[in-house]
Image (tube, rainbow, N blue to C red; front, top):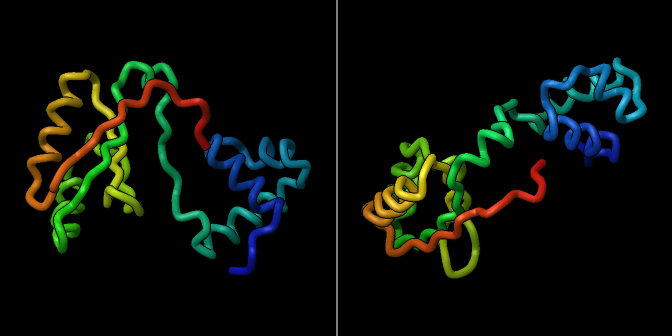
Length: 144
């Protein structure tokens, strides 16, 4: 696909904030016609820029959960095994490969501190995990 336009970027930002907003609502917000917004969405979907839609949890629900970034160092050649084990843990919401002293960063959410402690122990026990470091998220300033 060609480079995205400023209008495409603004449309994607609006969809990240609320993918359930009506096409007319997004069009008003962006100062575009409803037909233009609809055709841009369809074009971005066909091009694979928009790969799907998901659920973002409400603030009240999220405030009641313990969330953390769990930095994971993996032994050489063990990454596929570790990734597969982490994918099977529903508490792990996302997993990122990163540069630096750690190999992976998992974003996890659980109801209690005790359950976060248990989860980090489970992650540390995965064959191929050398060590973990956790940072509990205190608040989210914004999310797109």
